[in-house]
Image (cartoon, rainbow, N blue to C red; front, side, top):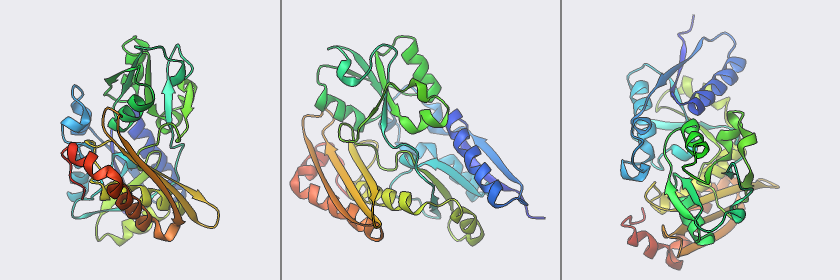
Length: 311
């Protein structure tokens, strides 16, 4: 009998939903295999009193999961792709990217219908410099305050009146059956999503062909092409939690991609943006090329001002 296949996951409700979703898919594809979940609390989950950018970035959400795989306690890990650092650590690979949920940002408020309906001085919570910069650019009359914690914690803070509205990823709300909390789904033209937003990634240790074959059954070619383009764009710009960078690709007919990207100052006063189109097979080249173009159009200055030289 084959040994159990173990999925490493953060223990937040959303992360466990994602792991259970992958577990269900893998059981359908591997009916004779025992598939288990190893829940873990990561450092990113433990430190909630400071912005993510100030404590080491998104890699804090996946390090413990990688240790579990390296030690043989887990075979693969499930991540929200927007939480995966642009450079994978030595010894690990992204084996597959599954079909994307709604990639848009969601406006959540008990009193107001949309961002445009918020009065001057209204307090909006967000955990993202990307969202903050775009909010400040379009709605300078609003007060933007940090918002950390898991999804339930963020919603509780909103309901207790700490914020007039909060901005969350629509995908997480949909996956947890909370779509009714969404007052408006924000068009990417108004708030460009983060690279990888709405997509799940499967990470394994490098050099494990059996686990790679298992992960292959979860892969979605169009989503993978979009996310590769987005991540290549962000990687070339030195993308991290410290930089307000957005990148979003959509599949079009005949395996074409439409990629949009931007770099902003945190206060939203300066934004450099652009777009391009090309083939799925050239996804990474498209992302890198758009980043190169924005660097020549002023993104290099913005990034340097933030103390993050491009890669």
